[in-house]
Length: 258
Image 1 (cartoon, rainbow, N blue to C red):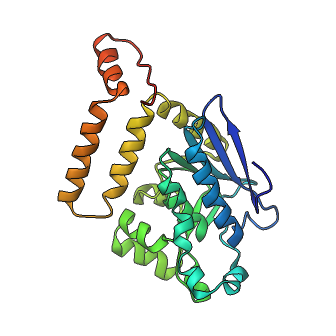
Image 2: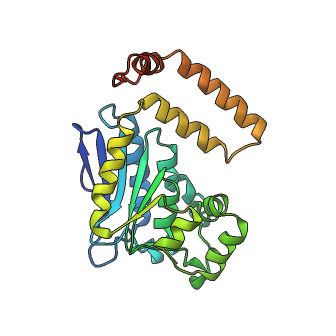
């Protein structure tokens, strides 16, 4: 998997991990309009790859990304830019756990991509921001909606409408990231998280992700029905029976994803 516009993809099938690294030297890993399309396709391909269980999204050179290719917005039609959220939602649609490893700048579409991931692990030098208002625009790839759902309407307005930067510790306090570590420990921390998740049933992780994501979409009564249906489906799987039996026998479970 090579030849992408501004990022690279590496697959470690032994660990079941795919790493997507934003990498545009000299441009703080800007995400082009073409890269948005390509990232969507890559996430969909990795979702189909049975050798991959986890996806890690990171940036090269000490930064995640300073945002999108701003002149590129003027090269697309109003209809096209109104649908940008479809591509950026690819990590959320992926049935596998997606971890964002964040450091340095995480601005604009970078923050929108991060918010679409399941876990956000941050280096202590992280700065998050939606600076779009400074150029007469708003976050348009899901940023306003996911941010408000995560931190509440008032805090979302404070971040978006002021275009202000949010440092790592505040990001942690707001619930925007799940953990903050020294920059030199970021990679190892992500690896530990992957190791922890790899001990769980792939089916249970996929189902948990799907049910939790739906919590944003409808009323409590609908969510409870969906949760119950998912619970019933998992109850009939090999992995659940193996989990119960291994617990009773005080041994490590051997999940098969079926």
